[in-house]
Amino acid sequence: MDLRSRKVEVLDFEKLVGMSSLWEISFDCENDRARDDSRELLVDLHLRQTHTYSPQQKNEIMQNYLDRSMGLLAAASSDLAQEGSASKSLSLIQGLIEFLDRYEGKKPVKPELKQMAMQYSHLHPWPLTVTSRREGGQVESRINVSSFETLGAVRERCAKVFGLELNEFHMSMKSGFIDPDKDDDRYVKDHDMSLHIYLSPNQSYDKRAHPKFLVAANQEYFEQLFSLLSKNNAALTESVWSLL
Image (tube, rainbow, N blue to C red; front, side, top):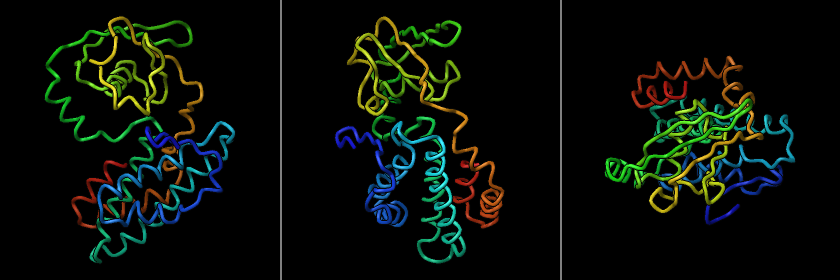
């Protein structure tokens, strides 16, 4: 794990130490920051195995996360009147949403970055030419971005323009490859982006292995989630619909 960029790559999932404690902190901790950061790490550990892991092994690890989360959710939501049960249920559902999003490459938006983007979105518009290279040729488009947008926001704009998931492509510019784990800390204004952004297929990304298909194939998951809609808890209902 790169502590500076918080980039995670799991070499041996079975030998990870402290996972039980990490699960507990991720969903039981009363400190919001500690709980959210731990949950983000927990999700990454279940998604970011090295290329030495087979698709079947990766699938089993993702299934493990889903099964354990749904089991904890069933226990926590059985009596929402009990202190802490509702908040833990919400945190577990959020963890499931983040798990599915992170597979595609989506990341939680830092509040300070969101505020800056909204405040300066109309200043210093920057026209960019984006070329998406794919089988059979390439497609080109132009977008206008703010100088104060992060490269992560630019990546999201490019994905939307070409109808791609964020992990479905690599993004590069004149100075080289743009690391998706660092692009939320880099701004358009700090880079020479006057020429081109290039998108190329990420050959290691498999849309068919998306964990949403594991959820869709499990009838018990759906029955459990739909049962939560009858709990008469507005926040819980909203989160469940977001997940579904």
